[in-house]
Image (cartoon, rainbow, N blue to C red; front, top):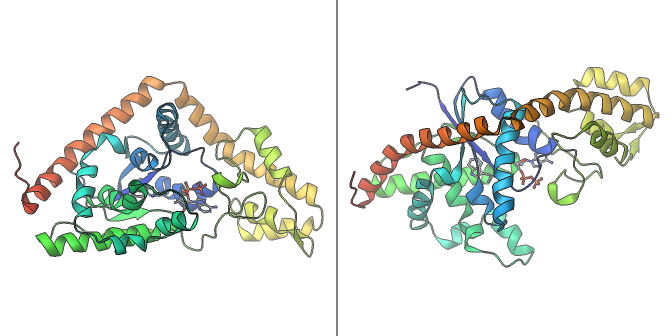
Amino acid sequence: MSDKKILVSGVKPTGRPHIGNYFGAMKQFVDLQNEYDARIFVANLHALTSLQNKEELEKNSREVILDYLGIGLDSEKTTLYLQSDVPHVAELAWIFGCLTTMPYLMRAHAFKDSEAKNKEINAGVFNYPLLMAADILIHDADVVPVGKDQKQHVEITRDTALKFNNAFGETFKLPKELIIENMQTVLGTDGQKMSKSYNNVISLFATDEEIEKAVMSIITDSESGVPTNVYAVHSLLRDKKSLDALYEDKKGKYKELKEELIKDLKAFIGPMRERRKEWENKPEEVERIIKEGGMKMRKIVHEKMVEVRKKVGLIHHE
Ligand code: ADP
Ligand code: TRP
């Protein structure tokens, strides 16, 4: 067993990732994989709350694994797996549901947002935070790298651990969220938050043509000759000093500044896109990685679940 601290996180397979997803959350997975015992999964059970289409869910789930490999996760260092290959989390989420009140879950942002949009909310959406708590707590995770908007879910996870520990004795470790400091929300080509739902994204694995098209469509509101939306995206790729020098030098020349951004985006995206493509051509190996990742995780969480069952009073047979 390694004595490294445990890191757990996941991404929902609901569509193509964009640079906002990367800089807001996924980049940390790569940056931290040497330091931690990292376990990164595809949250396909969570995706079922909004995606009920067999082909699409299967396809998206494989795509996320390719995305992980494309950004540079190394399956020797990071265990990659499908959430559904560790069904114990659904059992644990049920137990958590029995310790959690409805008014408490009604305070979750995601639930309130869905309610405000007046959607027909399914019970999966309502219970979403508890499944996420189970994903994390079952590993005795130390840290959970996520985007800003997931902070409340990790707080709920800690509350849930405390509730269980109070009811049945010390069992779960309290995990900490890791959020990239000073990370502003990445803005899309229209100046709003970059989001799959707004049609304003720069895809993380965009082709050169897609990069050109997206950058040329950035709306150039400007403050004294600096196109703010172009600058905002550019600031993800270059340090402030060299960026300010460039924007000073080319003040008011929006087209040239966009061309500079295109060049930098191509240099950043190109190698990841190529690495992803290499993995795309090795489907058997990718399948092996997912399968072995799932087996390894099942073995680890099994022991934790035996402990939980015994503590709760669910008779356990080996
Ligand atoms: P989307 O809004 O595109 O549907 P998701 O809700 O799937 O994105 O978010 C997945 C992760 O990416 C979350 O952890 C979230 O914090 C992060 N993220 C999404 N959009 C942005 C953004 N524009 N800027 C920074 N982080 C983001
Ligand atoms: N809710 C997360 C998101 O929407 C995905 C997720 C599910 C997750 N389970 C998790 C993230 C456990 C971290 C840890 O982005």
